[in-house]
Length: 341
Ligand SMILES: *Cc1c(COP(=O)(O)O)cnc(C)c1O
Ligand code: SF4
Image (tube, rainbow, N blue to C red; front, side):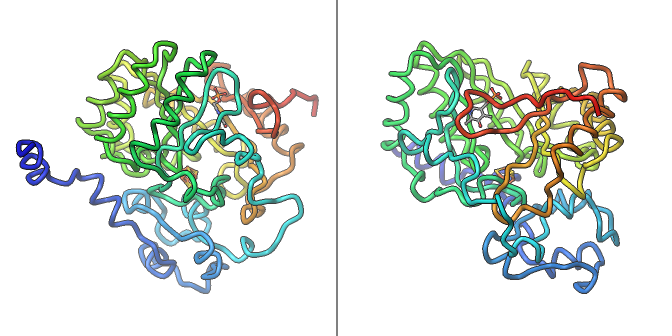
């Protein structure tokens, strides 16, 4: 089909792809961008070899120059503590590999499942619970996706499919559009949810091409962003959300509670307020999953509940995210019990 070949040949690379490919991947370069000296931080090249440093420039622009304790920097900087073993922190804390019925699917909860659509991310978050996920075994082409689609077709109890990863939006729009169409052909699926951090760190990801496939089928599209700190929100992020909302998409946010990033009610209240201002509803506040290499972000459950109780005093109920943790074997995320502190 020569027409298709011709149109591919003149296809201009979308601008998000350029930003995706121009990420900073060296500790020294990142520190230089922020005018910090290597001696000011306990960085680790070993940690960066285990899980590469990767951070898009539009995200670095939101960091405070000269601040070694910047909450955005802390999320991406490989540090010495990552290389020290910590009791209770493992490589598969959620036992996801046990719920991997066919390649590409994680099915743990009754009526919804995750599709591991893309193994890569624009940003490598040091606390990520999937940093050790066997993506190589879950990498696949369109033919292999048929197996996953058959599984969804057979599983009549499922009414919602979640594009996950890695980061699903690291995949090409042509592939994502194809996959969405295939899923829309399965009558019992009603909703398509996209869990992505990419539009936060590279807002240009939400372009016409994305919007056209995401709204092309009968499936109701829902976007769940991942923002951990109010400083991640800038005018480009606000514009990006506006584009989603203009198409009628529900836009939610999930946050991970992280020591040194957002472990105070003031920071979390500020985040919820800023989310509201740009039209995003806070959804989940996750307790850190005990993944090897992330113990330096951990806070005790008691401290988490204390922060949460304070947060409830500082926000209207509709801006308080649900405090949850993931317990292997449970049928949903587990809501943390409210305790008197
Ligand atoms: C979080 C998660 C979901 C979605 O859960 P919701 O509570 O509906 O947001 C689905 N599957 C897996 C494996 C998950 O971890
Ligand atoms: S999956 Fe999400 S949390 Fe993990 S590295 Fe990618 S963007 Fe960060």
